[in-house]
Image (cartoon, rainbow, N blue to C red; front, top):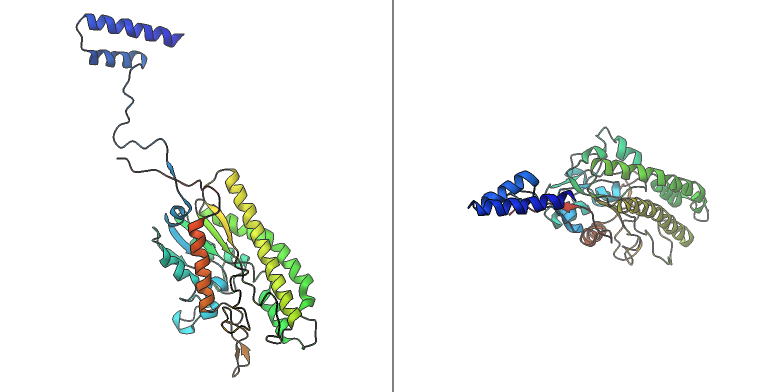
Length: 339
């Protein structure tokens, strides 16, 4: 009712002013000052737009810095050359997928490589070999974080040793199932802690978790490195179980982000069948078999880690994921520059 009265008064004022010969522009200013009617609502130059533009997945990824974290499957252990990093115990290699991903797109904030061989979830959060924690390298400028993690928590390195060093007729390899299963079960909490720490430091970033490849053929047909067919099938199964655990936590985390329409994402890249036809024992393997230093009677660290072709395959999987995104709308927004 009040607005109707005010509008009526404005009309009367306009008529009176017009009859008095006052220009209409003056009337407009009087009405605006007195009753906020007829005011110029054109936004001034430089004013921010009301509706920001949603970014697509690739735009989100390249809007800031790319940071690569993780364990030996991310650091490049399988192609590490001692002379190339000055003896750094993290064994970061130029042949890892990091370089391929970093060169695939123009990341606005550059790229940084902090994956470390042997890293567990705890070490990623708390530090390793006297170095700062990997998580400390992540901040609000990060728009893409990639990592592989969990294999060392499950103790896969020692599991393989037991499988390789056993007597040929022994079941020592598969007898480890109970303890390995228990470790994988505990991994749910550890992965959540890692993802929470990353999201806290980089709340608008896309986080891409890379799974582990199946080390042996889906249907093994011969013994490899003292491991029989049953051993190989079992190790494949444990790898699948580990991957399924990481995948489930990642999906759960991303659903929570999407439910609240939060920026960023947590995405899982399934690499289980990525080396199909190129497993250990094949003619052109993408993963190294047992590599022994005969002189020192020691197993070299590149054993059962990806080859150069394997890391290239990882790079392809991640760059494809950057383009496709999490399969849902992103809620990262851009404010277009005023014209």
